[in-house]
Length: 255
Length: 283
Image (cartoon, rainbow over the protein chains, first blue to last red):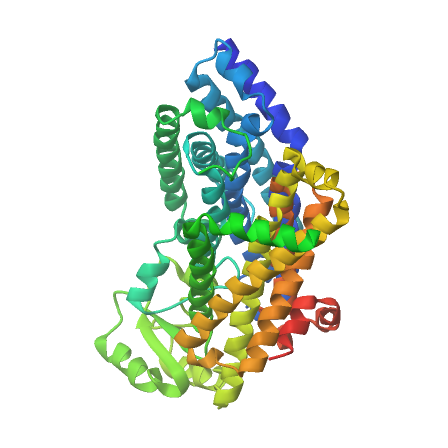
C-alpha cells in the first residue's frame, strides 16, 4: 500500500508538472465556452443562456478529451527510457497501472471540478446541491477516462495508430451529443442514433438536474461510470504488457 | 536535392503501412459527412410539444394537430411533462402548447411567431453546405497534418537529422523537406476526401479548378501551421494538443458551426484575420 501511495504521489506530481492536464482541462474549456458563448449569444432563448449551455456540455467533452493525456501517461516511461527501472523494481503490475489511473483521476477531477465551479459562478448556473452531484459525476468520468487512457497506453500494441484515432470517436460523440450546437430531432430513428453517444445521456441528465430538478439520472450515471471504470481498470491490469510498457524506441516506425 | 530526398524517404515510410493511410482518409470523410448531415437538422422545422394532463381530451389534441401540424414547417408531438426545460434546451422542441390553458391563443401565437422559412434558393443551400463541409475538412486536416508533422520531432530525437547534417546538408533543408512531405500527403488525403464527399453529397459539388484550388490551399495551410506548431513544441503530445486547440478555435471563428451572419459584429470583423475564412470565401 505504501508503494502504491508513493507511486500515486510521484505520478500526480508528473501530471501537474507537465501542464497539459491543467491547460487542456481548465484553459481550453473556458476558452471554448467563452468563444461559443459569444458566437451564439443570440441563438438561445429565455430558459438558458449560450454561456450556460456551453458550460454544461463543454466540460464533460473536455473531460473525455483527457483520454489522450491519460494514454500518453501510460506510455511516458517508455518514451523517457525509464521503463526498465520500473519493471525491474519490486513493484507489481497492478501497482504500476493503478498508480497511473489514480494519479490521472486525481488531477483530471480537480481540474474539471474547478473549471465547472468557476464557469458556474461566472455564468450563473442554477446553484444548489446539484453542483455537488455534478462534481461527483466529473470525478467518476475522470476515473473512467483515466482507466481507458491507461489501458490504451500500457496494453495496446499499436499505440501510435490508436492514439491518432482517439480524437475521432470522441469528436463524433461530441457532435451527436450537441456539444457544438444543439441537435434536436423528433425522428425516433435519428434520436436512437444520437443516443448511441454516451455524452448525449450525460448532457441530458445534467440539464434535467439543473433545469428540471431531476437528480436520479445523474446518480445512475455516476454509478455506471464507476462500475465501468472498475472493470476497465481490472482489464488494464490483466492486459498489461511489459514489452509494450518498455517499448519506446523509435515509436511508430516498427510494425 | 536534400529536400527531394527527405520528401521521397518520408513518403516511402508513410506508404509502408497502407492501413494507416486508408484509415486517415476514411476517418475524416466519415466525420465530415456525419457532421454535415447533422447540420442539416438545423433547418426551418419548428417542433411543438403538447403538454397534456389527466384532464386533456382527445378533441384538444386533435384541434392542436389540425391547426399546427404541417403549417409552415411545424411538427407537433405529445411531449413528456417531466423534461420540459431539458427538451427545450437540447432542441427537441422549440415551443410548447399547454392543454391546461386556452388553446386558441397559444395556437395563434405560435403561428404568428414561427419564423417562416424563407424560400432559400438551391444555390444558396448548396453554397452553405459546401462551406460547412469544407470548413470541417479544414479542421480535420489541420489536426491530421500535425500527426504527420510530429514525426519530425521523432527524427530529431533519434538522431536522423544529425546524420543528415553530417552528410554535408543544411538542417533547414530537412525542415523544408518535411514541410513539402506534409503538404503532399495532406493534399492527397484531402483531395481523396473532398472527391468522395462531392460524389456522395451533390450539394458540395464544385468546378474542377475550384476543387484543385481548395485542396491545395487546405494542404498548404495545414502544412505551414502544423510545421510551425511542431517547431515550437518539444513533444508530439504538446504539438497534437496545440494543433487540435488551434484548429477548433479557428474553425469556430470562421463560421463552420455557427453562421457568420449570426455572430456579433466584432466577431465578424475578426474574420479577416482567419485563414480558414479566406478559404471558405473561395466558395
